[in-house]
Length: 233
Image 1 (tube, helix red, strand yellow):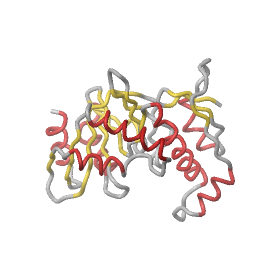
Image 2: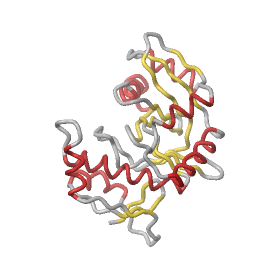
Image 3: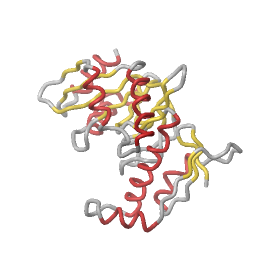
């Protein structure tokens, strides 16, 4: 089957009904040639599942494994995964990125509670940034990280925000070194030398063309108001 993910024609045959469900909104019936072919067998999935946290389903293991292959494959197309919750506000996507467990999804849900129909979540775990000559575009993917939020939608990139826990809410602009360090841990890794070179080029293009922030926040509703005021307004 063919799917159009982040503007790239991707060929893959889902192994589970749940994975097929999330891929369905990305179904492609056009006549463009395939850009990426994903190969992942049931044996691969079952092997991965044995190494994952107890309670992980076969479908979750499939999504995790396939997303890794996809996100390494797109690097040569000037595209990159940013492990984040992609929040759309005012027609732009803001990527709230952090290590698992820090609370990026909890934070973006505060925005939904506080700002209602003014905002929505495009993808809650694995959106992709496409780098074009004239724009940066955040693209939804079928890979939801178990959240169930994975829209087939694209929006201009507003900013990338690295989230960290703190008692008080504040926003600051990171140094270039901080951006590279944090971005590296939130994108596709374990790549070969050639792909790593292409990934670093993508880093340079991205860093030179978008805004980055570090949001220190608690889990109170005021955190969403601080972030919106300092980052968007």
